[in-house]
Image 1 (tube, rainbow, N blue to C red):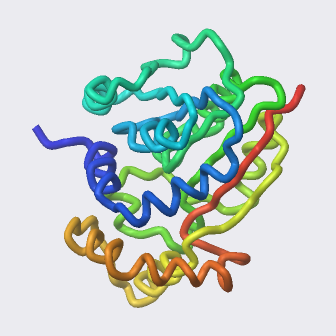
Image 2 (cartoon, helix red, strand yellow):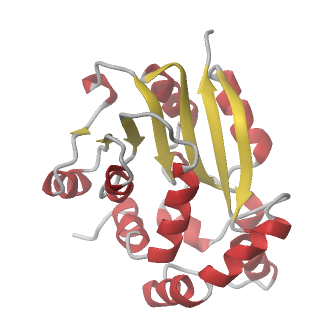
Length: 226
């Protein structure tokens, strides 16, 4: 039986050491309390990073294969929102809600498990101009425009307290591929090669282009009263 797209993507992403270190540290800058709940925790790499950074971290994951990995890593994990009895001061979600068809409902569910005045730290793919075969291979339903993600968060009673584009070079490469009608696919060796040798240098372009657009969006939102 072939693996589903989400698991294939998880397995590949877990091997991108430079990318993961970069994103993990971006997220960490906005986390000041624990416990933290990681929504869509995958194989638990971010949970483990938070634990080594001094935070208590729990996971929420529905995929059975990922749940087995989380169990092996001794990460406290819920497999549905209904299992969670207490609200969290911080909820994180890293490259997850683009995989969910009804993302508005997902954000509404997240709101239910965040304390009042608690925060959501969200990292999602940006810009439909960068849409490629890789998004299809990864099981994405969308890439987010700034207005789109802000509207969906504010409609769910979140106040935006931080917004930033990330990975300008990655966005530029994907857009060039689209203009040249190149259809990049999930080539494991090529993506790992890019992560190892090019990403550490190209990420510096965020100082220039990242103010305007990027391959991803980092947004931090506070849960407010209705």
